[in-house]
Structure formats: structure tokens, C-alpha cells
Length: 138
Image 1 (cartoon, rainbow, N blue to C red):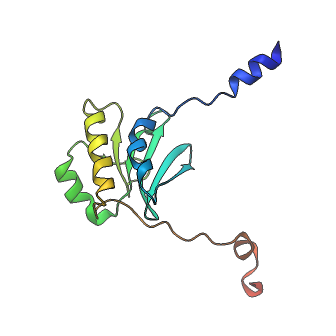
Image 2 (image 1 turned 90 degrees about the vertical axis):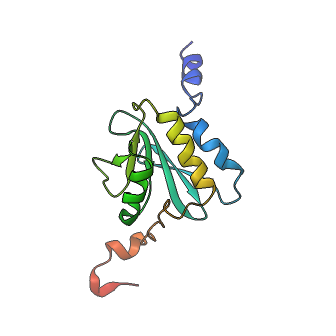
């Protein structure tokens, strides 16, 4: 009997914001990755949007953008605000009354490759180099 319940627990529950990234899946360069308990959407190698489904302040959409683009995005989307923990990105909380319409517009801008959206991820350093003493790098 226990094995039946274990099998049921392994059934994948859909992410509550999956409907938002589905239109992006048709893009040739679309990649979806897990990132600190959220789903991160990449287009053309850039991190565009991050879909969070935890408790506030991790429940909504993170708009990955450079700080220089904040004023223009805030003018167009006044409900966005800098994320309280990651202020380099803007945040659309799921609790906002206009969450669905604004999140959909952000996805549309992503598909149109709006230059205000997206950040290039920093290249990862190899573990060997990080843990090797300064004089002993390979």
C-alpha cells in the first residue's frame, strides 16, 4: 500500500505560471531552467523572466533587466517594483489585480525581443579554479 502512495507523490504538479512561458516554447532559442526554486526563461541566451511560485516575495514574475532600463519599464508598467531581495530586477507580484494581463504583456515583449528585457548570465567559473589557492591555478 505504501508504494502506491509513493508513486502518487512523484506525479509532477504543474507550475502555477506554466501558462505564461508556454508561448515562449515555440521560440527556437527558448530554454527553461530551474533557479532558486523558480523557473527561469531564457531567449537568445539571455535570462528574460523568472516565474516564482513560493511565498511572498517569491510569488510572481521577476523581470530580468539592467537597472538602466528600470525607469522606462516602470513608466510603462507602474505596478512593477524593484524586488525586495533582488532589487536589480523588477517584480510583478501575483497578488496584483492586474497580474495576468501585465504578465502576458511582458511575455509578448519578450517574444518581440524588447531590448529592455533580459540580462546576459555571467560565465560560471570552474570549481577547480575557485577552490585552488591563488598561486596554483591550472
